[in-house]
Length: 275
Image (cartoon, rainbow, N blue to C red):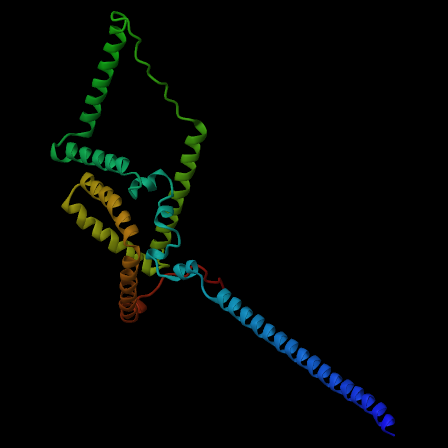
């Protein structure tokens, strides 16, 4: 009997061990599955968070788009250098090469001093310069035979036909556009442009009464060499001030339009349908 009990006891213990091992295995597998589910859930949350960040970064306006939304003077969308053509004239106006810009401005100042302060006439100056140039070249060409030196090499200057035709075609297009603009203004279709042109001509006539054409041209030339470079340097501040000024002008024009302009009879509309 004791032997039978001893034989039963190891079997019972082995059975209990199997049950315990199975329970532990189930617990470990369930814990592993729970950890996998948790890890998977965390990965999904991380992926979702990353997608939201990407979407937010994609939807956020870029610095260039924000910069393009900023008010710019005269509604321009290009840099100041591109507005002036982006070539050598733009480099001169914006003082990219200070020596060339200073030389051009100094030459214009010398011309203005000659004609305005010294009261030199254009025809007289041209004739004197040509006389001096011809005399020097003539004497040089004849004296070279006696002093055994090469005569002056005078280059042959020819105007290319294709370049001349391109310049003429460009001028023709610009002149036709200007004539069309003047025709539209005179026809009474755009009252705002009409008032702007009249005001500009009136201011120009007042300035013209103060000085002659040469002085006016020189002032415009100096302003062209100073205002763009100052505007490019203080672009944001000037644009902010111009935006406020334009808003105020629009308010005043709205009042003027309601009280005066709206009561003026208009000309025929451009796209008025014929009966």
